[in-house]
Image (cartoon, rainbow, N blue to C red; front, top):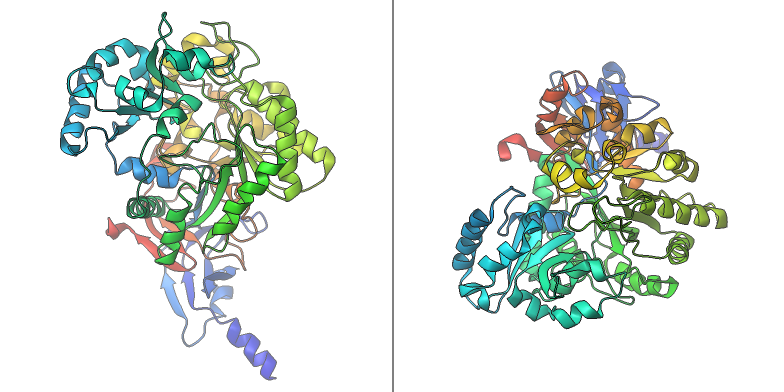
Length: 570
């Protein structure tokens, strides 16, 4: 009898939420009227009268007055702390500006910074179209006060940048360095007809410069992490994958050397947890060098072990870069076809055997593998690598490929057959200046229209997980859902046949994203036993038109049953 009484006491909820429209994202019970919470976990979900039978003398009952409730949203690919750093730094917000306006703003930031002339000035969020005329940038930023002041204009895509001569000199980028580049790396540093670097940097070229930047101190990193958590909680995001957690200012990202044990922004998450402000789950991945092998994974494991006991932080595996980006002038994404202006195919960062061996080694360790692939050749070779690992063992790990700007139709069904998730940034599925000016002139009409083939992948049984890649684009998932459903941008539409439906996008940011970050057992649905992460929104997102959906505001965000954001907080 005592055991029975104790069991009853344990089943008494702390809070019951009633009179709600609950979207659970649980296939077995998609909707409900009420739910209860005990010790930060979902106790029951269902009909209001049934849930209220659990009410005890100390149970609080909250009437939601018909408001829509969803699981906490999950971003399956975001550089959150870097996003915080970028937001707190000089930032051009990806605006299309002429050189004169760029000069005015950068000059003002330079004067405000003052201090040591040798200290580099970094400007975030620069529209990559700015490097179309590197000589014009040089005329402005390689003269006068900039002769000795290092300047880095960081592209909003985080894959390209422009560095003035003082910054290039600091990094050792000169004509001799350009001559030393191999055919496989020659594209990483732009040069004029005489072989002199023109300031344009791509991927590993960006690393060459960022390695010269001072690492932010712990206080700055903590403030960036705080900003990131607040911003995400405000959008209703309670979990995310940080796919490059061992990289940051002062460390390489695209060209990490084997054996590197850099900790990147991981200390920021640990400190945030220590001060009790880690109100999100973070699945932090470590970037594996393109030269990594099984032995290097052992060295990466030493980094994982330093942070594995951090509250609300998991370190489930690695990220691999297989190519770059499609936009001109970088054109470093690996294509099955070719770029119309150059006849080139882009660049794979790993050979096929090397990629297969690296994926296989991680899979054998039980590590999740998340691959950056924008070009269709990079996607195909990534799938080949996963197929190789699946033939060695049935690990069941939720591996994924992210970005997927171009995917050959022959490869659509391979995702599902291999159990590989598609992590897509569908905010990008719109016609804007990037696609019109920096991509369209260099692809065939068919290639251009077939970008971000979300619906085609889904129709082939592929699970789509939602992601932002913040700060490359906004962290706002509601805007991304809108773009995925309309595929309309400021300059027109992009293949309406690839539009996603509403429920699929809500699942992409809940249940499917939880799978992609390796936390499906504990979050992603409002299911008894899972952590009570949920949001209350200001409109019925299952019923409103798609324009209204994109304007959704979160009224309250709960993490482990505790309210961590309320609209009046901002």
